[in-house]
Image (cartoon, rainbow, N blue to C red; front, side, top):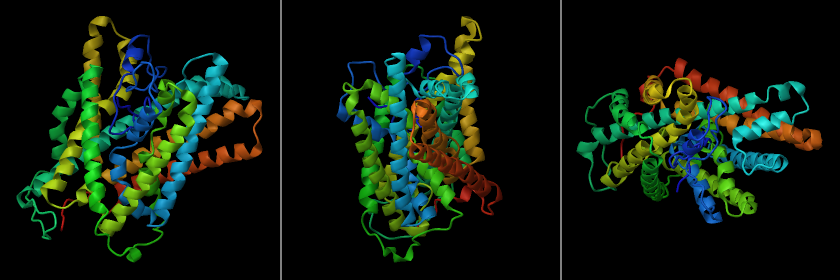
Length: 483
């Protein structure tokens, strides 16, 4: 059964960063105890059943699937923003650093599990206990803020994913409809596609709203698991078709810059860290393994596979399309039914996964809200909050319809905090009083500082592009296509 991220992250409470592939279950725990907006257990993974445990192979599959989503489709444009040499090298460094931070989180969680004799420790619990172990009296007195901060970033991450999904749905469906009259069965015939006039992409976003509302009103976790499986199948088939296409007919790469402008690099950072956001899944996965001692090796193997896949898709996509690469590589595919079906498959997959990504912030916010009213009003309030939240994500998607900048914003704001900033600081607060080498402290501080710089600069650059760019917001994902 698939796991879900983030928020993870993510997508993570699972940071269901698990972008396209998650399946929640944490509600059972949340419903069995008093919950609060900040003190719930968002990092409890939704898709993992309390069964006998999962094998090492199943853990590896869940970890890899947890990173597969819309983020990977934006990596070719991210490589363009960094350069054909700098992009892959940066992805390699980012993958190594993200994996290292996941190991830190697992190690700290195991440390507190042994100390407090607990079977499992989620992300928020680990940060809270890490602050309680700090030598600083002020941090110990405010340790409960650790869980609140993690919960906040999980909510931002997951709602950000939902916004990205809506933009993605509109862009891809709009392109299929525009080119439907010129779509053929011949994928090798070169022609200029004459587009059919159609609605503005923001109207497509609104057209998806009724379906999204119906999906988020589903509160049965078994039903959501069915949608998760459908999303997994759609994504797998789509990625195979995309990879076989971009791997053929690559032009001379010498025309591409090795290193892009430093002004666009922050956009690369935001998109790349968005794709790597699965740190919220590692603790639930480790908890469900039959032999948790093998988890560090599985984590390293899984992140190596993910990093290699990201570098391959990002580099090949940029090499194949060059400066014509769009915010999502699906928008560059040829105008034949085989590749148009990829967009439709991704539309189905993203639509099915929206409710799964939405599950995490809903399970953090709704239990707190319903605990403030009588049982009579609990269900109406629950449904009202779900309706308000899905309308909020649709409104934000309409206001910021550029998929590349939404990816960068979400990655810079919340994913960098969950994946790069918090784990190294957690290691310092956890082990400082027990003795740490100055080299380890310097390493942790360096990772957190780099993560914070990426957080600030990436957020600023994405906002600057949105506010001050001279191009219309809707032009970034233009579907005009020549094949």
